[in-house]
Image (cartoon, rainbow, N blue to C red; front, side):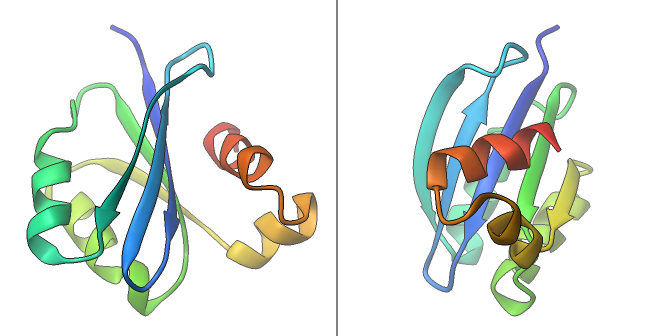
Amino acid sequence: MKKLTVGIDVSKDKLDFCTLDQDHRVIKRGIIENKPKAIAKWVNQLDLRCTEVAMEHTGYYGALLAWLLSESNVRFYMINPFELKSSLGIQRERLMRWMLTA
């Protein structure tokens, strides 16, 4: 079974995500509205046996996502955004890859 890792950039209105396979190749990218129905629909599509999620810890904006992932028993990691930005600068692609391999 192939392991999938999803990195999520959390903001007030949307969640940008990038899915990598076990060889760190991008297999899917997308945007989800940061609203209950949209997030729930996305979480229900995840293969729970082989998917891990890494997301920014943005407090209020990521709380719904964290709750829905927890309720669905999805393994997830919350990473301090300051730590991410200070270690890599504002390079989005490198930031997502770092999140997914941390």
